[in-house]
Length: 78
Image (tube, rainbow, N blue to C red; front, side, top):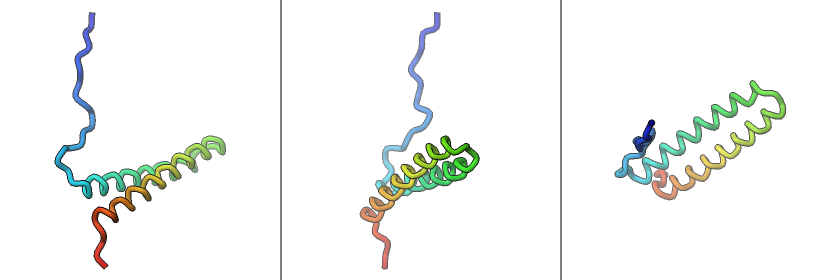
């Protein structure tokens, strides 16, 4: 009989990262998701394309929110 053992997480975030670093990485990840879903959407039929573009819009909204938080945490010099 197989007894499952707890495994370590596949992905982790090191605990001592700054908020700015976390936000920059989140923004880059969402930007990649946006590009991937946008590219994939045009390889799909109309109904699936609409779903993929909905996902793409959510990714873009998430990126806009993260970018605004990043501006508040670390304003760019003028």
